Length: 68
Image (cartoon, rainbow, N blue to C red; front, side, top):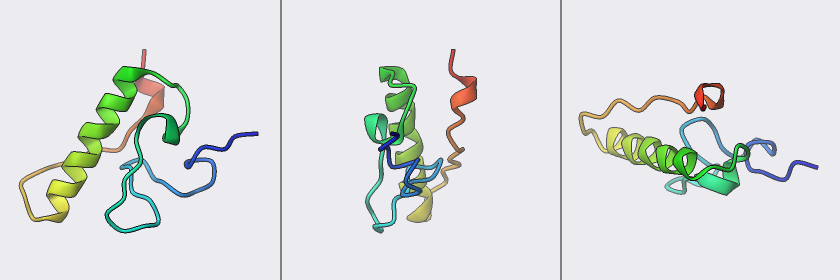
């Protein structure tokens, strides 16, 4: 049984959750459970937050198929 937030439809590829201002990264988003994936998700979440505040940021969605 997959109990991650992605499987439950609670988060998207930018780390957004159903709760405004709360972002999910790392183990909460599902496999692969790798530190460098979690770090990259943190960058995506930070860029998404910056863009929502009107900063010059260009977040891109996580694509787990591009992880070696």
